[in-house]
Image (tube, rainbow, N blue to C red; front, side, top):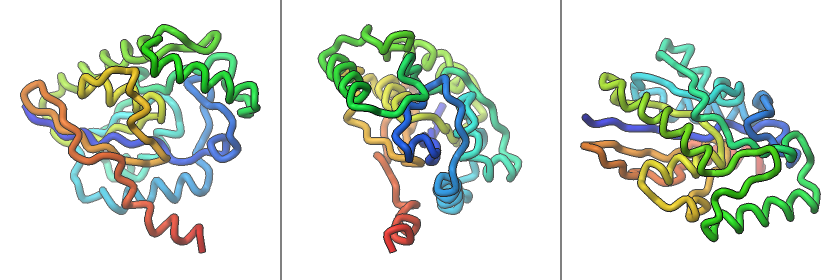
Amino acid sequence: MKKLFYIIRHGETDLNKQGIVQGRGVNTPLNAYGKQQAHAFYEAYKGIGFDKIYTSTLQRTHQTVAEFMADGIPYEQLEGLDEISWGIYEGKVQSDTIITGFNSITQQWSEGKLEVSVAEGENPLTVQERQKKALNYMLSKKDERKVLVCMHGRAMRIFLCLLINKPLSEMDDFPHMNTALYLVSYDNGIFTIEDHYNINHLTELQRTVEE
């Protein structure tokens, strides 16, 4: 069985722009620029012919792929694709204290201390366990050969590690700006990243903003 997974991060939200922590517990919509990013992605990939769309349970992912949904492509939301919970940091401005805390947590993750989390939040191991359930579900749908998956930045890094069996301590090797694409093929039990951090669809949009 062969599959292609087009995995993207959601478009920009106001909280992204303002530097406020989102995470699994903050359900914010796209802002105007995020909707432009989503449309740019749609224009670039509407001809792929996706068999199915999978999103997280959060509206910023639904809105990012709304134009594909409007075309009649079947879709489903899976909680396994939700962003990591950032616990007590969620909804707060990234102050010096929070940034220091983030840096400490991610540094520990890079050292293999993956059980560490923000207070009341999730760690990468917990996130990956729920992602495994989502992945197994998607793989069970044998008639879905081209799949669009819309998720979140940190969750995407963890998910890509799961797919290619990369140590979670190396998750930061995967950059993840809004609507960036990773194309991953699946064939006979093996996942391969065919396209890494593709943001070509944003070129004209970014040029317009800069002008």
